[in-house]
Image (cartoon, rainbow, N blue to C red; front, side):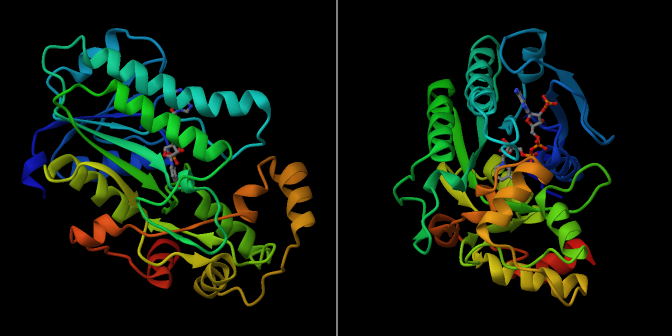
Length: 313
Ligand SMILES: NC(=O)c1ccc[n+]([C@@H]2O[C@H](COP(=O)([O-])OP(=O)(O)OC[C@H]3O[C@@H](n4cnc5c(N)ncnc54)[C@H](OP(=O)(O)O)[C@@H]3O)[C@@H](O)[C@H]2O)c1
């Protein structure tokens, strides 16, 4: 148990989804008293409290920040959708406006939290096919890098002058199925069991992944280690090509074959069957954190087969 969190109050904005519930459980196990701030109640029951907000306007919900030890902000509409203009708009606004309103709320309470741990995306580096990206690599082009930068800029504007902040530019979080959503890994596992877990496009696009246990340990460290500050890549030390990721996944699931999918098959399937954005699987990136290595963070699941085995067997 982390004694630094014992009986401390942590607020998780946007904590009702896959990562929020996982983190709420982790921080509760570490002795914290967790409040989830979201429009809908969390998907799972647990030792946390739920407070409703709209993610845009200050209201009575701000009281949960008064006297809190730390704030975690995960709020954001899922990017797993067709990128219609209204979805793109919501992807951006749900992140920027919720971050802004948290900043407004912090200014209206007597004892605001001294640390803010902020979700961001490893997609901020774009989709370079082979280049390995580190914290100081240039940002990419397109919707995701634009949204990532706007999100981080909104955070910098929302912070209190004295507040420590940590930004976690997160890769693909591999999570356990809790019966109400285990993130994209569970979808990939389902497709693989149907024989569809093969190479996609060239298969060389990078998959930068992190086990949810390490993700939660990173948030915990961000909240409690006063030496952590600014942006970090929150992804494991061994990103892998899509074709190799799927080979390891098939092995763990005991599925001998996975049909390959060409680019046009993925585009049609994503649009008409999955109602999502094909670029989420056709492109990727290799990101590795230099800062976490320098600061001695030890991943509990650095190797993909071991991570998949833990989550799926
Ligand atoms: N899962 C990953 O692998 C991964 C990787 C990198 C970054 N991230 C980011 O981490 C965050 C959490 O991810 P997740 O997998 O837990 O996603 P999730 O299950 O879709 O949960 C998203 C959270 O954001 C809230 N939200 C959605 N639309 C909102 C809006 N318009 N206004 C305010 N709040 C809104 C949801 O709460 P309500 O709808 O109940 O309000 C929910 O609490 C997201 O911002 C995501 O982009 C995730």
